[in-house]
Length: 271
Image 1: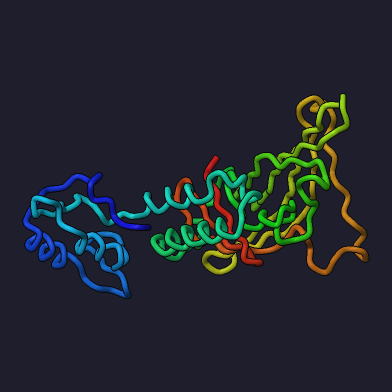
Image 2 (image 1 turned 180 degrees about the vertical axis):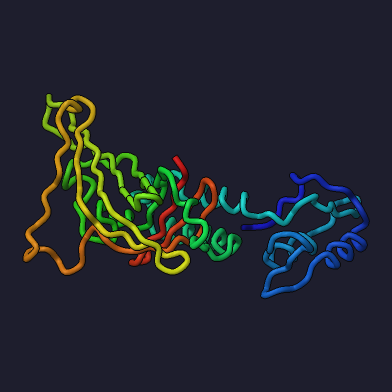
């Protein structure tokens, strides 16, 4: 976050010297954070920029009514960093670094996630807006998966996670479009990768793959869903491609950030 934009916050004006004195006395240093009495933690760097910024031309510095809740602006910064990247498929190395840095700022501000008594915060249908793994241009991300682009006429649509904390169902839902030779229309389908999940520790989620179901949509929506058969036990890879674990690193009512077991950064918003 470049700086606190004090110009857009309600304020009262006092002299620059008394402003700094009043501002400094309202904080108690704690673990590289400055903690306003009764308020949220704000990094020292943010406060220093607010206090040590150039005074206005009339020699006064405004005192924001509530400069301590940086999370909304940090969330906006993260959403801005991942916008236009087609869920990460269009991300280059610079985009990956910007998204990771923005996510870390939000994670630091939010603090450690504890789901032991707040598992209900996971409940709902979440829309994936960014995955660093998709920068590999495959549907499997950092895991093996079919490529997207010229080699295969596959277009990735919306991606969702549907989580039910009572049944412990954890479904990855992927909308796909398969190209077809002219004059046939493209085939649209929704693949649902069904899992069960369990909480490990305070913020780690382990998912266990169960099955994949594909349902055609659009012009072929009348076709029944098809369950994709799994390979025989003897031919399956040692690690189940649909199972794994991830850490929930930030969570509130409408935004979720996770870090996967292969370092994948994913950003979701409630749908």
